[in-house]
Length: 50
Image (cartoon, rainbow, N blue to C red; front, top):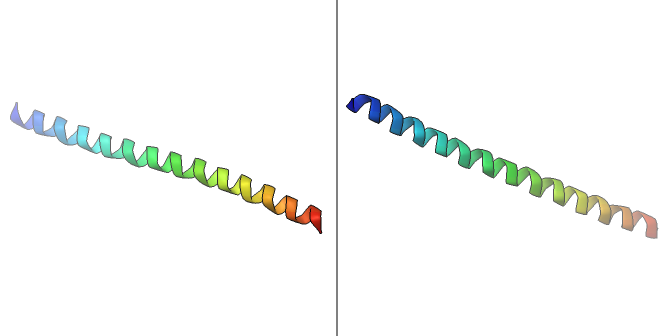
């Protein structure tokens, strides 16, 4: 019984860490996409002035 608890706790810890990494990756990708859109708009404005 003790081994099953240890296994369950370790598995839960691994899943929690995985969720944290996935959430961080998701946020980073959305931030990157937003920055690329902003840069593309700024670059487009710069081209139209020339």
